[in-house]
Length: 356
Image (tube, rainbow, N blue to C red; front, side, top):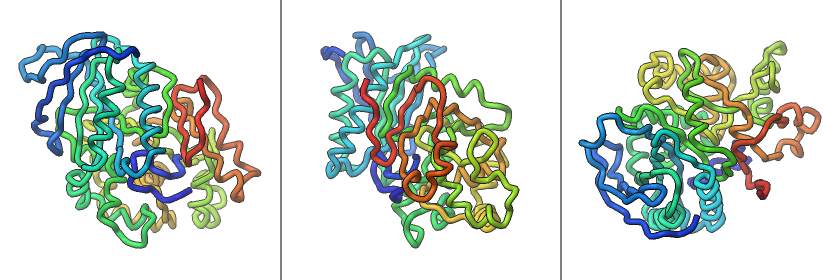
């Protein structure tokens, strides 16, 4: 259960065609949090086109998907994970209704060319129409830090509030970073393997109950049984940290559905970002974590479950078994079981993902 590292495949408990000639166009994305490069390509052999504000009056659905790839030049294993994840995503991606995949890549200078070369190779001949948007991690961090600084001391591995840790809270405040015209986005780790059409996951937004702003799967290890030990001791009847279906095991943020418009409109959610509210909840639950956004969502979920749409475990089938061998073998299987056909495997804590 290592602390979150500054890499796309974040090491944490959450615990990730035939080549053809295709032109690539370059455009600046006005209004995004950073300068973003759109590499536009048409699926199924269609020609690429420069983005235009005068496109169709009724554009096809935009599927915004975001992943982080940083320090990849030092981590060949991370590059391999990213390639496997994106290959499986594109293999199973099948367009419906002219939907287009908008792939947001958060990266640093050293990793940018590696990431773009990887995508250029994988996207040739992709069935889904696609755009690639590159965000500079340093510019995003600069925008995030004032928003999330106060919560970092509660949910980061370090002893202090490190500036660089802010990027691991991107999902928490993304509604304040992305332009207003992006109303929904899915953030994913790179240690994933897709077994279903990504568009089916976007359809989960339609299942959000009223008031929900985030879709997220449960944590599949007794991580939070451990983290909430003091609160559980003081409240022996609590369901906090208990396994499903009746307990509150916490969340795993390897796959995150962020309804950005709902997040912007939710008075409750934005109040929970305030330092005083974060402090109040961490004191109530005696909470000290190290898993970034996952910890924040878990703690908030104990207090306000109505803010979350719980994804079926098959959308984030975590494979890590670290806690089975570290004091929780007697209850581990109650957390780890997952019935149904797996749609996304999550090889967290470097667990191998089953081959096809």
